[in-house]
Amino acid sequence: MNTNYSQIKSNSDLNKIAPKYKKILEKTKPYILTYSGNLPHYNLSPWGHDTPKENIFSCIDARHARFFDLLQSLDQLSFGPVGMPMDKWVFFDCGEMPGGVYGFGVHAWDLSKEVQEKYKIDDSYKGLIPISMYIAIPMANGDWFGHNLSSVSTLLGDDFKGLGLLTKAMGIKVYNIKNLYGATQWESKSLNIHLQLSDMELRSAYTPAHSFNKTITYKSFYSDQGLINSLSGDARKAKSWDMLVDVMDDDFIIDLQNKIEFKGERYLLVGRPEYRDNKVLLPIKKL
Image (tube, rainbow, N blue to C red; front, side):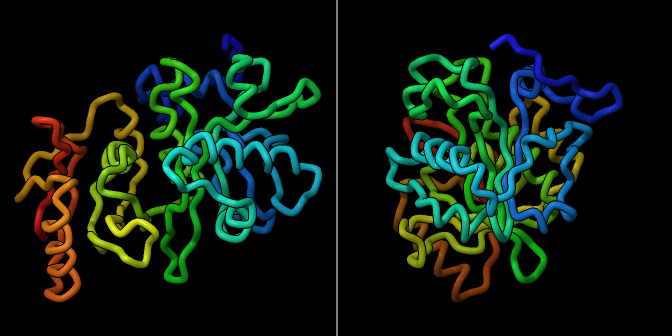
């Protein structure tokens, strides 16, 4: 993948990010898929990194049908093995119309034959292949909900390490999100991404309304400087905490939920997971 698709503008804050993220921006093209009426509210040039006009897709235009299929392929390659792939109606109803899908893509000739086969791409397709996406949905109170973050970086090699984090950081900037709610599982590796971007205030620690009971509902706050700092290449570590929670300790997690739900206590995840003695530990501070 040697094609130099884009250049970072000399006055952009993106000049401060780590070389590995710059390399991804050089090798890919950004895209956005949404309802056209949403576009005036979005920043299609985050930190000066322009979204090409040909990569701005309307979810109600039938001519983009193949791209819609490829987004579903991306989702299945990312989440299929863990049982969370989406039907296309979920993309449309819960993402594209009310919010949007932002991510990065490459052309078919930039992918290995093996990856092309996984996407089920034939020689007749000459368009963009989505390799990452971030879907967010606006809420009634003016905040946002993070619906889906995925990438196929593991299929693309070392040059694409960090694609998921870059996609979410850029997506937050595109949607102009300041306050974001989200849901993720205690054991999820995506916590490394979410906590690299910001602290996460726990709104629930155990969530039976979700298909996976051990789901965290959280709220995070974002600033431009914080987003750029998250891409510095330095891991965001907790400076202090009140407890380290073993993500496999179900009893503790349910007790934490009871304290949040019935006692009104508030807790904050304050740093990326720590790995000790074959355990995954999350630093938590009581507010």
